Figure (cartoon, rainbow, N blue to C red):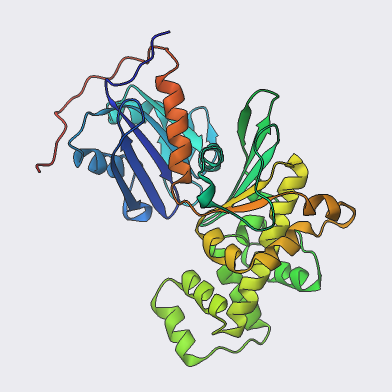
Length: 353
């Protein structure tokens, strides 16, 4: 079959509750033409971001777009969990004048990207690296929310399966966590999920919990918490040891993160390894690897098995873009004719150089 490609560019994106990453590649997916990171919450719709991005590109208009979305996708329609955006493949293709738009769960594109990572951007937490070939793997990423995905080896190739595992019930492991669960239940009486704990706001909740238990904070730290990004400041204060309640929050966060990563590995029997992605992994997990691995491996009779499962932190912020590009290259090379491009109503605006 004759491969498509070269007739238009390829748009790939990673849409999150906080940031949206967009990249434009040539029609074969080999050359990066343009990229941008944009604040999601400053825009009313994804179309608004996409139009602005494409208008700034003095390159061929894309024919295909593959977009990782932080939320569930049903019937080619996605709702971003932590953002008031609704994305529809058919409507996006029409409004952006594209041949085809494919929406994929954000952790699914990250999982696909993990299969294409250079060794230097996957930092092992233990003595061994993940071994994808012939094995099942898992991917977990805490950020604005908590994403989880499975990578299944079918005997010939890897298949990526999206999940919404971050919304499963949070389970306390000891008395302190049971007390924290009760604390969170007052905020979220309907349901306390792992995402309520393993996310930026979850770190903030852990800090509030330890302050409520009697943790004292300095006036200087209180001012810092009021001035900037509160959750990021808590992480900074905790990692540096400048705040006792923040340090306790960071330590427990890393332990619970490891425990849930271990839960995912057990359910998948991910003997090939677990990839931990996202901004929080790059900061907290690498700095608190002992707490993370202890939580990961403490599985009673299966502790020995868990100790053999490799865990690596993905330090590449473009892992989702890598995955989306791999999927897009599959699409342009599948030999199938795309739907006819909708007729453009107005000429696309280009910026002058």
